[in-house]
Structure formats: structure tokens, C-alpha cells
Length: 98
Image (cartoon, rainbow, N blue to C red):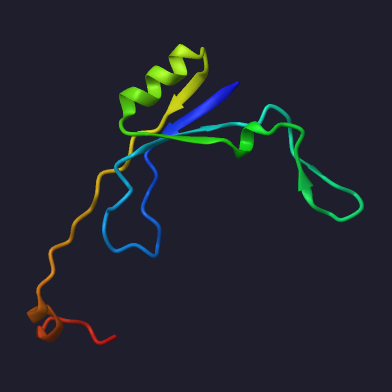
């Protein structure tokens, strides 16, 4: 059993950073997915692909994985790129016409 530990990104519907400080562990499914022949739905014999657990910090997620002998892959979050903007930049002479 293998898991992925990561810090989820904010959704496109969020402007703030609420609920992005938690860490999540998701399990990779043990078996491959298949297409059900009658309806064409995608199925799997493993239910671990549906399980995700939230933790308050990275150390708690790693401790959980090590306690239960789960192989894990840790993904560090990308640093935030913050671009300073001023209202006056909307009227700057150097601005390209869009």
C-alpha cells in the first residue's frame, strides 16, 4: 500500500487561503481501474482510492503513515508567487493595450 502526503491547493472559487494549511494523505488504489462493459462506468476492486484523511500538520500525517507501516511519498507545496499591484498601474503609460 502506497500513499501520497501533500498540502492541497486552494480551489478556483476561493480568494483567500482558508482550509489550505491542512495536510492530506490519499492512498493509491491497489488494483488497476477497469471499464465496466455494460454501462461503460469506470470501476475498481480497491476502495482505498476513495479514502483521504486530513491532518493539522505535516508531522502528524507522516507519524500516521509510519505508525501504520504505510509507504508514502511526500510532496512539498510550491512557494506562493506574490505580485504586487497598485491601482495606478491600470492607467500607466507603459501599459500594453489589451
